[in-house]
Image (tube, rainbow, N blue to C red; front, top):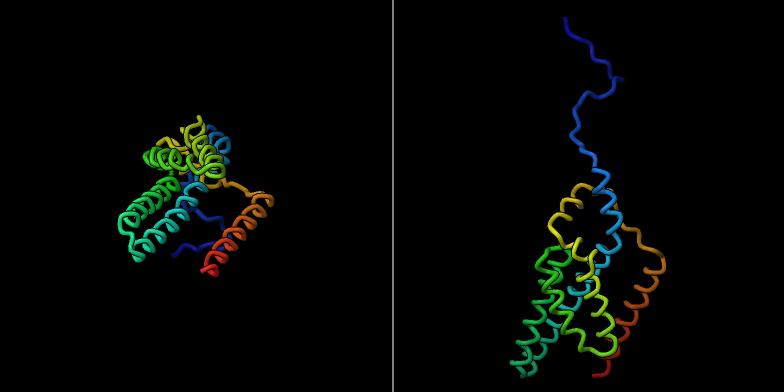
Length: 174
């Protein structure tokens, strides 16, 4: 005789969800703000890399090949740094520090921004976030997320508006 199946019975499948250890979750919660700030720097490297690469192409087309090639190399470096920093690769911390060292020369705004970037990369939390062991913490705690405050979103909207205004003014000035 065949066995009857109860359609209302609880599932009997084995689930291999391994809960995160409390230590890993505490570490992630302690470092999530710093991690998010570092990943935002990676996004800024992407933006800078695209802008510098476009400027390099424009210089090549404008008849200044040496400066154009220099800008293309710098743009490629920023794009690679952006990828590495967003992925929290240890080597990207070194590359980001080198790029931020050059960025300190952009007085006064570049100096302030790059000093903050150096703080993010070189602080104790920055060293922890870029450590290979922290990748295991991230994998074990996918449910821990950063919540962006409304103030940050407003600041970001104003910054994007200023950038768009500057690009528009530069475009129509020609």
